[in-house]
Image (tube, rainbow, N blue to C red):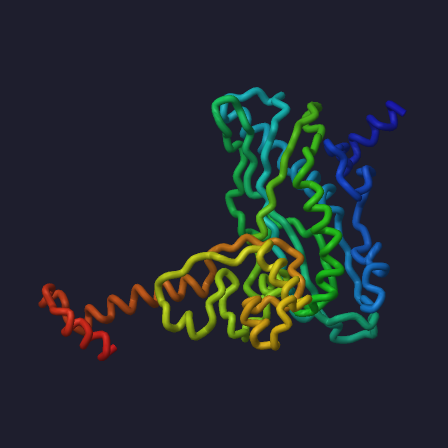
Length: 333
């Protein structure tokens, strides 16, 4: 047995690891390669047949493989900060999660299985690794090109339309369950002959607006509720060009979905929709609300708006213009 274990550890792609405490509802078997993304799904959606193909890695196995890919960088980082390369940790790893539709992947010639003609890919990137010491935390690894496809590790590939909420939920739910389990456990991984401890923090920032709306249960982009970060309607957004704050959250979206589903106040559809601010499906991935293109545009527009006003009034010639004059510039604009 000892010899077999030693042989295994020398095989490429095989890494022995364990979780403390063990992951809830996840097998402790570490010899897992590419698995069927539909395994264990059929039971939960009896009334919704999933006629598609999906392949994925188990989330923890993929993370371990990604860590072992940068083993040398981690050890180098420890040396560069004058630390012993036999330190066990705790290492904190920041993971950026991304998911996007890949567009049309239909067969142009040939007669393959009858499956959706679009694909969706869920992937992750190791952004940084820090180690906690008595005098604070030290960053020993940081991805230089976080937006490069070279460091973006595929986790799940599925033939599905990203607008198909039910299929997307069914296929990604096992991944999300694994991710939730990993949040509360420590990974113990043998690196350079020493068992080291890793803790993971997940950030769902690699989503475009269409997918954020999809996984957070919001209406599509033509909705009156124009924003994925706050409750503004199109009218409110057009009247308020400057003051914005991030108010939406995954927890709030879940609560609003429950209100939408149960309609506790027995309201008409329009009143109910106004109450839940455009949440109409069950949110299933927690995305990180961050400034998006829409708000950058609004911020830029407000800034340019002020500049144009000053240019119209030639304020460089007349810096002490009265309020009435400034109002006139505004109405001209």
